[in-house]
Amino acid sequence: MIPPPAVLLLAAGQGKRMKSVLPKVLHEICGEPLLIPILRSIDSAFGTDAVSVNVGIIVGHGREKVEAAVRSAVKEDPTLRHLKVDFILQAEQKGTGHAVHSAMESTWGSLRLKEKANVLVLPGDSPLIPPALVGEIGRPLEKNTAIRLLTCDVPDPRGYGRVLRLGFKAAGKVKRIVEEKDASPRERKITEVAASIYLFQSTFLANFLPKLTTKNAQGEYYLTDLIEWAGKGTAASRTKVSTLAWANAEDLRGVNDLWELSLAERALQLRLIERHARNGVRFLDPSSVAIEASVVIGERVRIERGAILRGHTTIGNDVEIGSNVVLKNMRIGNSVELKTGSYCLDSVVESGAKIGPYAHLRPDSLVGKGAKIGNFVELKKSKIGENTSIAHLSYVGDAAIGARVNIGCGFITCNFDGRSKKGSRKHETVIEDDAFIGSDCQTVAPVKVGRGAYVASGSTITLDVEAGSLAIARSRQENKIGYAKKFRPE
Image 1: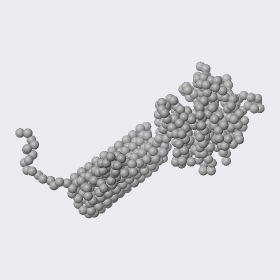
Image 2 (image 1 turned 90 degrees about the horizontal axis):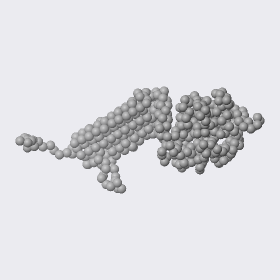
Image 3 (image 1 turned 120 degrees about the horizontal axis):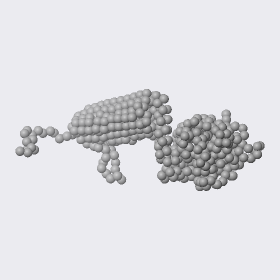
Image 4 (image 1 turned 90 degrees about the vertical axis):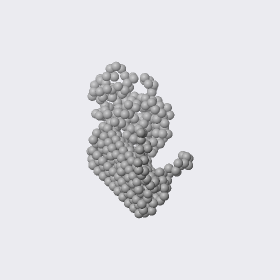
């Protein structure tokens, strides 16, 4: 088995154009930090249960936050399980060449790199790089080759380093890379660009990184200058530079400001949506839907316009998701219907349940099989039993409601005891199986309604209701004949 290359991920930059105190690589794309999709591509390209991939992440600005985010992702995300991650500090950001030199002289360079190993260098701000590209550029180098360089022909090369070939010919030998600020007018017309992705022979790096200088427009150590060094020396010592041309420029899209982040996120969104669609999910309008990378969706699911699926949401089979539904960290069973405008967080909806329209499921709620949570119903930290119906206009907080309970319109659990925030307490309402709660009722917790009990409409329940009982807690109606005329003007 051919071992994978060691990987260096450049993630030390501040990202001034992002206009943010957050390090650039921690800005979110599809619900996760910018550099996580790249790590996932690395794992997918090289990792197996028998082989781990050594990844050195070069950090600088906000290093503690970057390290914490990566450690958390590697620990929790099974798609990153084959990565062995180390962090390398670049205390001063003096260019890409300086970053790689810092890595080679670090503990990572001495412990992780074997003699004549290959080192794959990737940017930390290009989240659209696919596993196929990583695998292709990371193939073992050919004999006498020191560098493999990824290039791409783009219609608008502004901002990229240009690939200079001998005689300015498309098939000519690569001579060097010239950065935009250092390029002549003629060189700027070149449309073949360097994509900031390289595979190096480690011995070559060790020999030539110390020779880099800052004699350029930006006063930095350019990693691209190594291309020129590879072609120097005697015929016996000269090494080759090979290129890998990549056709899809979108895969190489970098992120330098918030607009570019938006464009990259839209592209990544469509890739996620396409993957789900090809696995049996029907999107009525893919361009209007937002799905984060951690969302899992089953088969025969229908998703209407404007839906937002976030966090660790898992959706079963045969589910209907209406327009403008928001799900975050939800577990949805099979054959569930989530109607228009429902907003559901950190809760569980079991198979066959119906939610909405415009229902609000707050954290730590559970809706049992076949239950109905209707329009403008809010649940908070409540358990709703199987085949129970709360059809409309109700607030249910801190409640345990059994199976086959019918709750009429306008029901409220009065769960807050009114104390200050420091000493506030919420109390539980318990409604047992087969109970019936009429419209416009309140339960003042803590209180219990027994199995099969009836609560008459308009009642405010402050005491427990025994099983099988009828509770009426309202004033008796009195009709005063002819009294209404007193309220009308003469």
